[in-house]
Image (cartoon, rainbow, N blue to C red):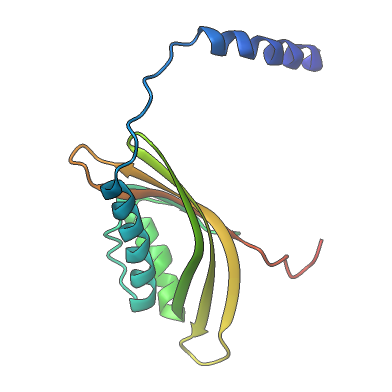
Amino acid sequence: MIARACGFLLAALPLVAACAPRAAAPAAATQADTAAVTDLRQQEVTAASTGDTTLAYMAEDIVIMPPNEPAAVGIPAARAWFGGMLRQFRVSVVYPSTKVVFAGDLAVEQYTGTVTLTPIAGGQPTTEVFKGLHVYRRDAGGAWKMVQDIWNSDTPPATGR
């Protein structure tokens, strides 16, 4: 029964999509839009390396989704998460690869990165290779802010698979 219902829904989807009103094509991203997103990414890198938890580059409704942890929703929760990390580690983040796609007032950035965490209490630094997505939104005043940040590690879990 469920398989039949799923089959019907899959068959009906193209018809529904064909009847849906077409949205106007979003305006192309400007050099200013690209520069603004690049600047926000650099603000994130600087904040991590300096211990700045003001998170000025994030929107008030930010959602961060770190690996193996619950999401942190809103600036206070994001500040608490970053503050906890920065009390334990000196952080260095590098994004060697980024690709941003703009769609009107939204931009999605797919990235790869490395983060080096040096324990403040002493010990050897660890470097992690990761990948993720940043989502940015342009507000009514034209300013871009990060609204979503999700990432995960390229390193397999310690328990193996």
